[in-house]
Length: 155
Image (cartoon, rainbow, N blue to C red):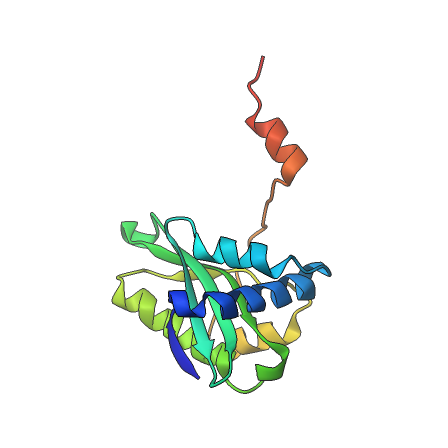
């Protein structure tokens, strides 16, 4: 696999991969054209590391930089790591994680944080094999109705 930060030439392949990822996790795909538009206009601080094969984007790590981390150094936050079904168990996930670690070191980050679904045994096995430490944290989330309620002015 060739590893690189996403370029404009990767946008269509990353959009297709993101559509597959959405269908895999949410059970419903988004229109490819809409996803391609979103991928082309990432918010500031959002990046995509791609693993390409000769024919397509085999996998991607969607991440951003957060501040502050340990000793007030930046940290990388890996939002999603996804490898196409056809490329799984061929080393793309491990290559993406190792390159992400190298990027974090190059950028002076103190750590990388990410989450994994408890039921995703293959992903957790990869992370364990790479020496990652599971954290005893509880994740919180506001979905649209609660988010809107929390953002509303209080009387």
